[in-house]
Length: 389
Ligand code: PLP
Image (cartoon, rainbow, N blue to C red):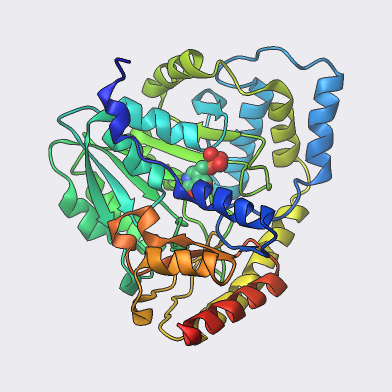
């Protein structure tokens, strides 16, 4: 076979491997508590499911425009106006099959040999994977525990060179739960004025999951960068719709035609009934979202103190998403070692920090998208493991 050499540079998302291993252990009869995969343990609200069923019954099963149906793009505009107080024209909205395709296309567009792309480390693993795939040079934005895993605007700005084509930012962040304060975002936006050649991709997929009175500051609020800003957002986390594959993205006018062309070449369009479900989600009652976020907040308040009681663990308070990212260096084990021991011996699935970049060494990601009871049981089992070790 004459395979493309670039395939050797493609990484992956190990959370899926852990999910598979946990399922295998479960098949063998082991009781596994899953704190590994990043997906809400709630059901998609019924009115959203009904909207998709109705759409199918109404005969909505053909192709749609690649950019997404107009009523859905209009619903996205209304949603962004409600949430961020910004005006986004439906022409700038591109509907995607999930959040991931937005990063895939943005990185394909801005990545090629000779340029640099900055990305968060620890961060969502697909950023670096895709940057390397394109041949661009990956430049990490190191997220530090001491800074509650928020990026430092000064450090980001200092990392920009004439070759920087794209900066990827993610707040609230996976895997850390870090939420960047408004002042830092403002500082970054101000500094970016001096670097007009740089495009920004802000991954705001966890934008509705913030705790402790924190508020999401969307990059859309800054008109001075709107002509070089790509927003990644979607339904997966907010509406418990990970398996539906529905996301939206906002693009500057100059890039819309290009990304739609990529979509036509790739997936043609998102399946029609799911797009109707997306309208019901945005325009319908938001109670289910608020209840889910409240439940996550309660679990956060349970898991963080419990993790802090484990010998060798130290966990900062995560401001958003549904992840805790404790420092585990005090256990004397590497992230991978502890991840494997917790899964194989204690029956608790988590993800080693190194799955999110080299700066994730010394940390473990716990997804608290599980019941408080299971969280307590999991931490108890880990406590036993650490004492017996
Ligand atoms: N961005 C971040 C930061 C994520 O954590 C995830 C999923 O875990 C995604 C994007 C992808 O979301 P989707 O499942 O909608 O493709």
